[in-house]
Image (tube, rainbow, N blue to C red; front, top):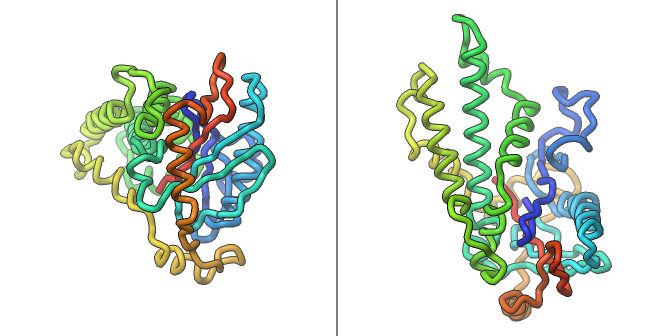
Length: 295
């Protein structure tokens, strides 16, 4: 996921195991709610990072800035995930990597936005299940429903979740890194959105007369949402990519610590507003974007 402090979110990237799955036959992928990418292991690689940067990030940011009358001067903040390419270059774009072990502390997209998105996705999934039960007959089979749950259903739930993500929620995620641009919107913080979505999903689950649903709790759903929240280590990435295609044969990136002092300087600049804030009526020197992967 990638967005800025003005609460504009780019189309999220999605990595699937197949470039052209049967369920999307004859579908125009440009019209999907995600930027479609593929990898046999369904994991981020350096080549896919470059693909996203050139074909998704750059065009969407150019359009956004042009529509808002802002110059193409961009600061892209990324975390040090092993699969991320470190040689991203484009005129007008400055890419900086956050210091190691700081993602959970200051990475805006990791300040509850991704967790809230997962909760909204789960709620949408439960709404679809309950709707199918209501519209079905006495022969409804939960096993059959899940068997027929495919990437098309998944994309529909992603689209529903994205529609429910409020601008106030995205803006609030920048509080730790850039508090000066954050507004206080009661009821729209990532945590509040997350809790509301989970509570609704639990109530929906209790309408499903099957074991594991009627007695579902908020703790159960939170465990599901958080079960893949820990980033993979470099060793994990090497193991996952050992036998895949050319770009996957590259070993996971070794963290470069040489830019840590500069990142600190950039963070201080952001605190004083010199890093830029991309929104109407506010034309600073540079627009700042944050990107982080969902697991």
